[in-house]
Image (tube, rainbow, N blue to C red; front, side, top):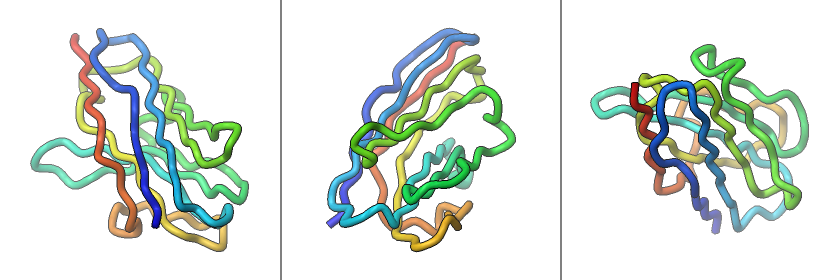
Length: 126
């Protein structure tokens, strides 16, 4: 059974940095996509970044490209999100997601993913 546990987040002033981490358990191999999403109340969940654990390019949304960086931990089942140059509009709940994929073809929509973490709050004050 796949479980995702996020950590990190918190509050920071605009222009600052925060780091999130997602620890996954229950993966039987590297044929999974892991992703970060965020959701502001009343809006649809927005993809931030996604990566296929079997290797390949990381995909970022245009709104975070150049500011956010995703990396895998040494154990491969940990996905970190380093967020730099944070803006007030980055304030929201961030969620880790995962689902099985045998190809480097991770879904862009939140509806593609079946496994979710509990979410962490990121607050950026201007």
